[in-house]
Length: 95
Image 1 (cartoon, helix red, strand yellow):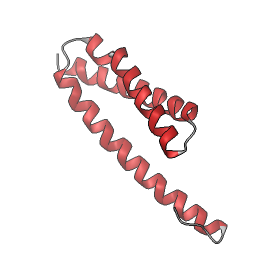
Image 2 (cartoon, helix red, strand yellow; image 1 turned 135 degrees about the vertical axis):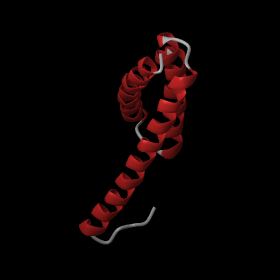
Image 3 (cartoon, helix red, strand yellow; image 1 turned 180 degrees about the vertical axis):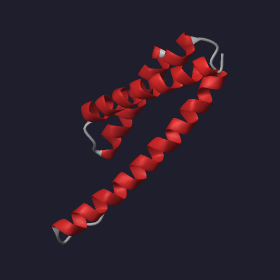
């Protein structure tokens, strides 16, 4: 992480990071949609056990990287919920 000299540099770095985050969310979404083809039923799509494993992992990573684990958990729960909705729609198309 570099130390910025002014607000413009801070904003440029935030924009750069946002770009990468969005790109990675899109990539994650692509894999989520692929996963629907391997699921046998709606319970497999929802897979609450897997969700909790992911939450546990991201909380640990948040602590490791110095991020707020509660915020990261909240963001992931929202993202996962939206991906489950997308995946459920894709799952029903493939029936």
